[in-house]
Length: 101
Image 1 (spheres, rainbow, N blue to C red):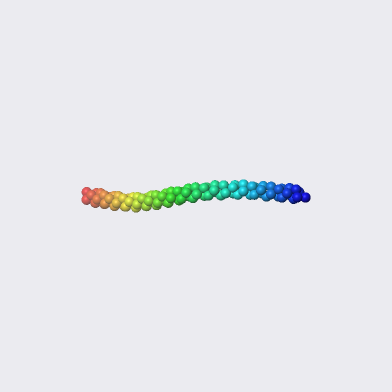
Image 2 (image 1 turned 30 degrees about the vertical axis):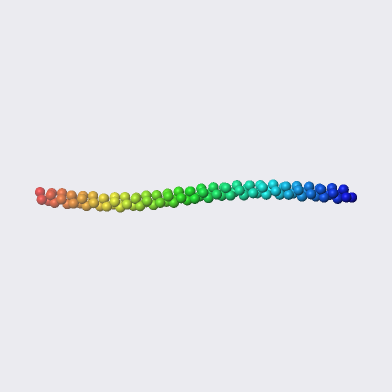
């Protein structure tokens, strides 16, 4: 009777030990997954930060290019107006000269 109780307790201890071992292995796997996820998250955050900085830099360059384009357009319009004025003056002078002849 005592031996059967000991065998029963041994089998229960073996079962519990097996369950603890399984749980420990699962916890180790979860821990490893969590560490991997943390590393990936940190890498993704660093990449996101770098891309955000790059986007900000490119936005600033684009704004500067737009300003430069607008400056060029307004300079071109001024130059066209000056040329028109010179053309009109030369035309007036030409007409005046023709009229005097």
